[in-house]
Image 1: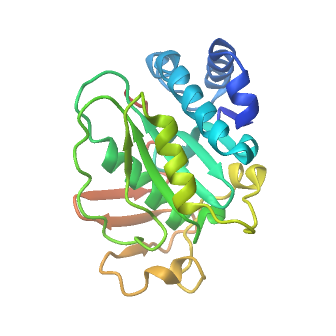
Image 2: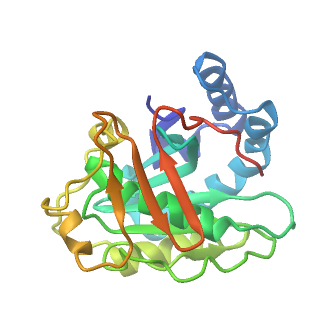
Length: 245
């Protein structure tokens, strides 16, 4: 189940917002588990902000033109979609966008997305992930992350007017030269499955007091026990919940 939209940044910023919105609408219409119409409509307000920020990043970092952007990327079994994922060479930026000025818990939301990617998404295992919230409203603190601080960076917060500067900062602080880039097609179609404790990515979290338990079922059913965040992923869990904002 790939993202609703995927393109290199140079193509994304040159495309009209209405064209991207139409593609999102079409993909949502044929999806088995659809987002609410207002969730897609929210992109009408969010796309110009994201496009302007990406254009600013490309102006400062010309090689960013080849970075890949995915919109509405699904996390199977837990009923969520990540608003946007930006693949910066070897770095993954998970983005949650909120419209308006209403307070939100988007930091915790996008932090959880990053943890899901690290623990369950094979192509993301062991890679640097930067959670990013774009909002003009107050963002409540996500609290102390229980583990994975070696690969998940602190959540960044950007207003709608400084998205570009925030992306530039993320790129300068995290991207390295001479490192093999992420294959966007393979990443977008990567499997979600429990990363075994003896695998290289998951071994980074040995000794963590946060248990991740696998049941005896042959499915991907897992329970991650996080402080204040208990999530169960399995056949009975809702899949693609409707996102707000």
